[in-house]
Length: 493
Image 1 (cartoon, rainbow, N blue to C red):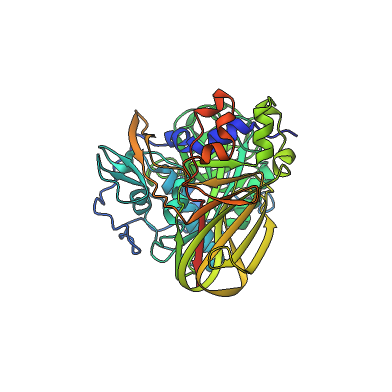
Image 2 (spheres, rainbow, N blue to C red; image 1 turned 90 degrees about the vertical axis):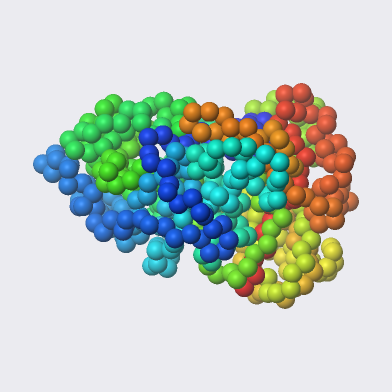
């Protein structure tokens, strides 16, 4: 089976923030908490208590017509499992952060039985700032407006929480599962069973949809079965359960079969069925993913936060330069085309417990090396694969005492990098494109790419030429940007 084109992969990696950021919302009150503390301790958040039972959610439903979750062999719900999270009310934008926090809280409840306190507005303010001239932090800046009106994506959420704890919590996993009932996005298709397994094993899963098309109350249940959803999305919410027996005729557009996802939204408790609604199994979605957090580490450090550039293996680049059609690469060809090896030098004394990094494709192989000093003796190595594209933390069996050390990450076919600062960045609200500035602060002598047998500093002014991108076909060049720091995080216990 062919993977989608290498061109779309580059486009996704570089500008997903400019395509998925249209998933923002209208029609809700804006958040009243304007003084957000973006340090390690987040601002307090006032939310309603999580739902204690599914019965409370569907009192308006016609009980003679259908009662959800009656057959445990055909249904599942995080609420009945005890993993419920508060139903929030977002502002004009920010659904990507609200749904991601639902995933974080749900997954942590499953693993630890504790409802953690993370305010989505704190995360948003770590991602976006407002300035027309000064860019002191690595983040996305707009020149006027409200950060909470802007859309975003899971790359930005991960970058905001990878090395700067919020109430002690760092992001540990961001799994990009793929598209559902659709090939419109540049990800492998995810099946119904894979989504169910993810919710059962990890908690809530984010899903992209249009928040208003084809929605209707049918027999007291708020439902959606929008068949053009893969091409027309503007919102992100969270799947928290399913019922295979949910009636096929309980939608404005009747479904082809019984079954629906229970989706938790971020429009407050007076929307839908107490903040929830039902989405038909028939309804396509361009993207599903989740975010999970950990409190196992005392500190973390990263130079590369936000994914804005991709480096591909020389063999893949050569094939494109020599005329291979961009859509002809299979996933196997990409993953076996050769390695991309990146390295970052850190100087911090402590016990290194884990390394965080991104994989760019499902099933991609990786090898991590910890080397003494600057590319010195190998102190530890670990290899493996991950099922899904995403951000992952790899824990070492035995913590390493380090002071100055190099982390080398080798991945098959491609690797994500932070990219370089640019004034060409665009954020989006539901109404308009908002011009802005993306700030990255790469410095010489700390981050490298292995080209042939030579470690080349990513700040080398000839780096685009040295990785072969200057010879790519013209249609590629509008997406190409110089790689900055690799997105590598070191976590200390």
